[in-house]
Each structure stands twice: as structure tokens, then as C-alpha cells.
Length: 156
Image (cartoon, rainbow, N blue to C red; front, side):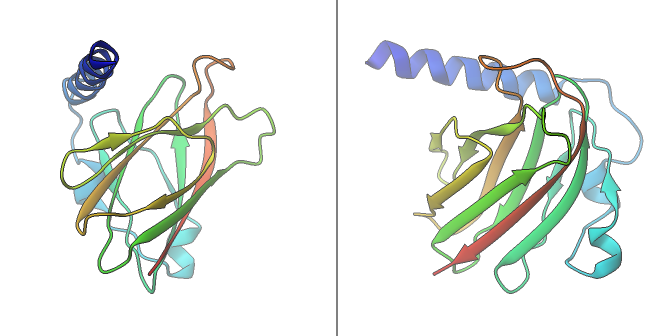
């Protein structure tokens, strides 16, 4: 059991390190555009790079983004739990063959959990900043590229 946990931690650290060492582009998307839930922002599609972390703005317990994902690309999505204790999130695409899911959740205290499917309901045990890794399911499908939407709802 201890070996399995160590193996998973090594793999996750490797993915995070790989994602952070990719080629740098001007204008990190998380610094360029903070999205809110206004109508004009919901219609915008983000094109992140591997090294970007997208910060989703949660207002009144909800957040929504449209993102373009390239094949084999990890999407790193950050949000603050505020005073909420439960999260429900959904990934959706107009492409019926979209191979995309929530791979991992990283909690403010460093604990991790996953993998999940394209929907997740999760208790938020610690107040603070959470990170969701979104990627293809490498065991059940081909690499996928396309536009998808993420909707997050937080409750108490």
C-alpha cells in the first residue's frame, strides 16, 4: 500500500514538473485574463499553454469557462473555495467523442485525490485554493483536441 502511494506521488510530481518546464510564451493566460460570469466572458474561449494555470472566478457559488484543449495537454484549473464546503463540477463538449475528465484534485493542504470522470462531486475539507487537473483518460480512449466547457458549483 505504501509503495502504491509513493508511486502515485512520484508520477504526480513528474507531471507537475513536466507541465512547469514547457516552453514559455509571452503573456501567461492566468495573468492576462481573469474571467467572471458575465455574458461576454462566457462566450470567450481560452487557449492555454501547458505552463498556464487558469483561475476560474467563482461568483455566488458558480463559475463557467470555455477552454480549448490540445491533444495530450493538461489543463490546470485553480479556484478558491471561499466559505463553501462542497463542489460539483462538469466537463462538457459538443464533440460526442471527447475523451476528457478530471484527473486530479489538489487541496490547499497538499492532499490529492483522483482520478474522476467528466463530473465530480467532492467535499472541500479545507478552506483555500484548490487545483483541478483536466486531461484525457489514457486508459480508455484516444488523445483528444477540441473545445469544452467547465461548470463549477460550490455550496455549503
